[in-house]
Length: 158
Image (cartoon, rainbow, N blue to C red; front, top):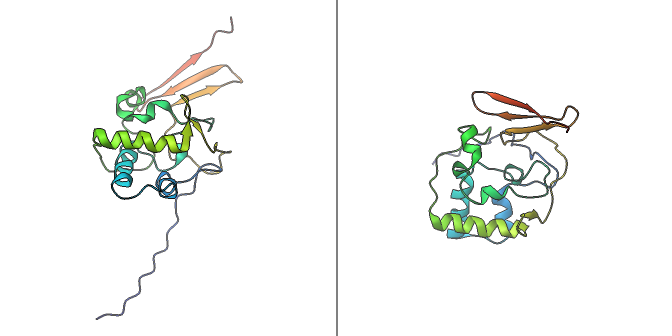
């Protein structure tokens, strides 16, 4: 037998926000395992999400309610082909996978508005999520970022 030692050095992906963590490490910490953990992971991959911040609102106080279900059935899919800057494999979660995903989300958020049990803090690294909606309070304008265009709009102060 060969006596080979392999050392891998790589930079990990930094968590984007204070109090953020990877979704799967949080699920393991919460006690999910086996089949349930695989179901959660299939739904997470389909959501193109690595961190809690990838499925949370920009404010960081809630989960995005529409992400309880497949994002491809949401308005976000109309804006672009992907919702992450990272590359994910294709997953087609079953109904049971989505049921388990929803159950898992209720362990990190509560109430009808999915308030995070541990709200996220300030941004400390680039987001892995593709943000597509922007509001600029100083000019009272907004932008919608599609894959092939940007729509700008102004709010009428009256």
